Length: 354
Image 1 (spheres, helix red, strand yellow):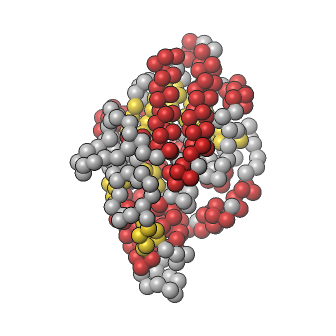
Image 2 (cartoon, one colour):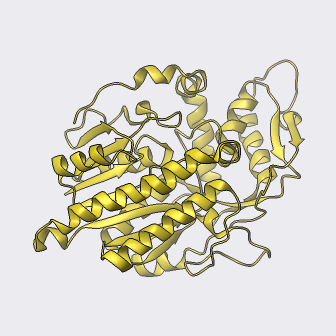
Image 3 (cartoon, one colour):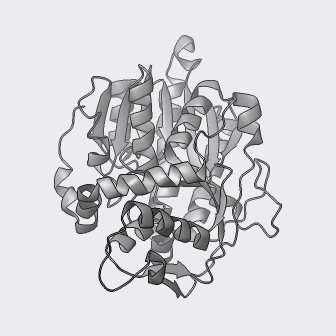
């Protein structure tokens, strides 16, 4: 069986590919444009595997996407390619509209043409799995509410609005054209190989460098944290066992305020990296509260009971165990994140096994 995965050089995409290659005999075709957040080094451990193929292609390119379908004849599509950084979406919304909306539309169109041309036996297993975010649901007002698969969409940022739009397109292509689709919406991911702009890696790296640890507003924004390898496991279960036309929410069951996350990182670093720069005593001394960003949602929390009850999935990592592994990984892989920050990893964007 062959899986076409878009955005496979990104954080979640690379974790998913490593998980599939290491735990199954499926072949994976990784289609990635290689923007600033796409890094081939995140897949160096499996890049020479016989079941792995890479194509540097923009999902907005209709002709090249068609050629990939014709060349590899995939049994499944897992669509992760997206612009995902909220702050960047506020500064430059166009790229988010282009990739997340038009790119998804183009991928749906080419998938549908490919699917319609398949014989009946090949059509039976085919699935288009669209990977989305809990941010499409907007903000939770109370402390006891949770996002469910039937929660209304109320996106707050250009990023979440573009992802909400792509979700609607995917469901429309299922209902109107009969393309067999599934949608998953996940909570905040964290773990190894996370792009340094994101909260957890940014705090770890800044602390190690003795720089300020910026916290938006009062730091009381709540997020449900999901270890990325648990997410990869859930995505594969949905692909194999999920029902066509259904939506599955995937969460880590780990609600934490941003300030709690930062304090916990500092505590782990006190144990794992006690030697510090001379200009501060404790890592928490570096915390600095900054102006909140526009439209910042206060709380996200996922109800994962559907995927647990229907597909038998639950996360393996607690937040404590996952965060410890993550901090330890960044301590042991300074060369990786140093190259990402400096841009030197751009030199690695070569080669095409396909």
